Amino acid sequence: MTTTHHIPAGKSGDDAHTVHITPESAGWGYSALRVLELPAGGRHDFATGDSEWIVLPLSGACTVAVDGGTFRLHGRESVFSGVTDFAYVPRDTEVSLTSPAGGRFALTGARCERRLPARYGPASAVPVELRGAGSCSRQVNNFGAAGAFACDKLIAVEVITPGGNWSSFPPHKHDAHRPGEESELEEIYYFEFADHEGTPGLGYQRVSPSGHGTGTDVLAEVRSGDVVLIPDGWHGPSMAVPGHDMYYLNVMAGPDPDRAWLICDHPDHAWIRGTWPGQPVDPRLPLYTAPEQ
Image 1 (cartoon, rainbow, N blue to C red):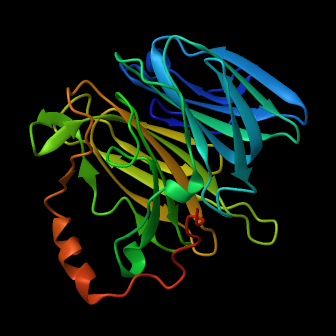
Image 2: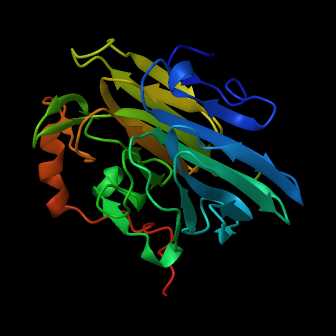
């Protein structure tokens, strides 16, 4: 079922993309996401316009040509097989993606003001963080986090949650500008799930009203290729059903002058963080680590 904020796989795409979320289609001002599938030998050209973008391989390798330079991305077999390298492309330029063997590529974007230089992000430099403990354990690949890679507005990370675990927990929000305490950020969740013996995976995503913004209220069954849009509200938990690891790509941006990820935990559930120091991290994590240089 498609709702305003839960968009199933294939429902937001166009001729070139399986997912195509723009600020206009989302009804907000900054965050964007495209997922591009290229056949072997395929090519895709696009103009960045008023937005900065990170080209992130989900599966396969590609070459990114931009501003007279070329970045060869080694990519990966899948989001569950390893950390990937990536390329940052600035606003107001033309970009060409080619893939000799084909693959699937995420374009994470944000409207911005500054034009930063195009850059290559090696997989070896991606900080891999283990967050939470016990059944709240998850892995975060901070490739485009605010403190890990320089952008003007864009913040983007990957999260791996083992089957049966709860992620994005405790529920938290970032929908109000409170200097030093909370950022105002629009957020996109893009999901993929690991199959088990050919059976597709699934999970559940909750977003509840926080008293700010539009009162976003979502309880969605999510599957590979689904998107959840979060303009405001407490988001979490993200629940992975047993037997199926869950991946989601988070894309965030907003109007605040500082590029920062400052969150506020839901007061009814914030206490859970205090239990983590006494629990081990799920032994299934890390699913993988960043490669050495």
